[in-house]
Amino acid sequence: MPYESLRAYLEVLEQRGLLHWIDKEVDKDSEIAAIGRMMFLALPEEQRFGLGFRNIKGYPGGRVVSGVIAASTQMIATALKCDPVPTEIYERLMHGINHPIEAVMVDSGPCKEVILGPKEVNLLSFPIPVWTPTKDAGPYLTPMWVTKDPDTGVRDIGIRRCQIKGRNKTGVLFGAPDRYGAIHHAKWKLRGKAMPAALFIGADPVQYLVAPSRFGIDELAVAGGIRGKAVELVKCETVDLEVPATAEIVVEGEILTDALESEGPFGEFTGYVAGERLGPVFCAKCVTHRKDPIVLGLISQFPPSESSMIKRNLLEASMLKHLRQNLSIPGIVDLHAIEASGCTAMLWVSLKKMYTGHVDQLVFGVLGYMGMSYFKWIVVTDENVDIRDPFMRDWALSWHVRPDKDMRFISDTAATELDPSSLPPDAVPGDLRGTKVIIDATKKWKYPDISLPPREYLERVVAKWTDYGLPPLGKVKLPKAI
Image (tube, rainbow, N blue to C red; front, side):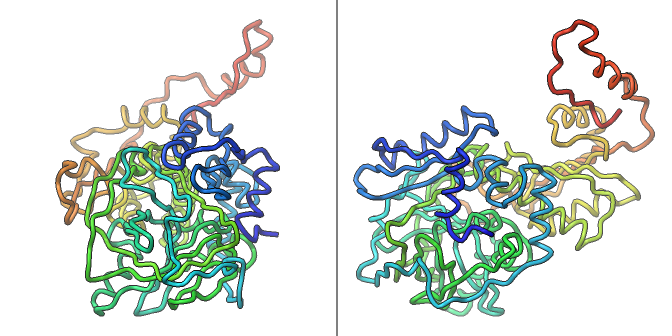
């Protein structure tokens, strides 16, 4: 059975040693983020765990959890209820994408246990952390936003940062203008009306995993397909939108289309603080929540992070499905979004090149799917190069590329969102533009033999290694290329 709520999922994490509750008093603005960041900086992925805080200074009874969605591949597999093997995760995701289950409406749910009207709304009453202490503009939520296309009624779910600006006001950063939330906002602006919107915090973890990807269909239907059961939704109290019935906190309201306010700075997935800019304003009209709600925060900022882990696993899977199944591009062996780039600026693809234009077809398929603001570096190499091995990536760049022939530039196009190299930090972002580099790192002719003994020779000595009286080898990983 799938997890019905965040709380059911947290119980399983705790049972498996993947969640540690901290009972010592912590400051939400100086300690919560720092503890989470040290967990990512100091521990290898296989040892990471989620963090729970239940003694927060100034917020008696308040609880915050972070790092509980994607601190590791093991955690993502726990959320998906599969083995922590890339092929298993991929198959689980593909099943959900190919067999979506539409969300269903229910009359009520735990998220309606407490209902606060306009005069009672106070976002400052929740223990919302500062995620880059001394550098962010203030506390930020990392919630899932719900909006609808006013032309089609199609719903979008997206994770977008949310600066708390007061009792009933927040900012919102849609990111690039080709993101669905930004498109919806532009359409509402053409109508001269504010955009109905809702944000929710703390739901079934699968919803957090699918929200950042671009499936071309309702993310909640994909979540239903992955879970094997429809997500249950309830109607909002004040706007024509639906939210998960088991969410911890729901905030309803509208995003203004006739006003912009300063938003940021905020520590972002690039590893740099994204500066202050003008952004839309969300006005909260109603808050509903569970009794004793849990605030869930995603750890983003410097990679590796939950943000990069989600993108690495989910974005790769959805993009592979699109390229292979929707576009029928043959020969794609693997693709890998580089985590140091926040899985947004650099992409590697291994390809069995079959015809003239094959590399271009692949690259334009990627950009057409993800949008031109993604990936300023796209490197395509041969099928026998392990693109998940940093050493082999360097080897391919070193010896498969003639820079004057194999590097192409797409100039004056959309920049990777929040890329600090696109303009100086004191410049006011307008129509952000940049350049993309396409590197064809495939072999253009038959290459000389690789200067390693044949694979069978190497495998033979590995099998006999202890016979030679030598210290243990450890894990052996032979290059694919031999």
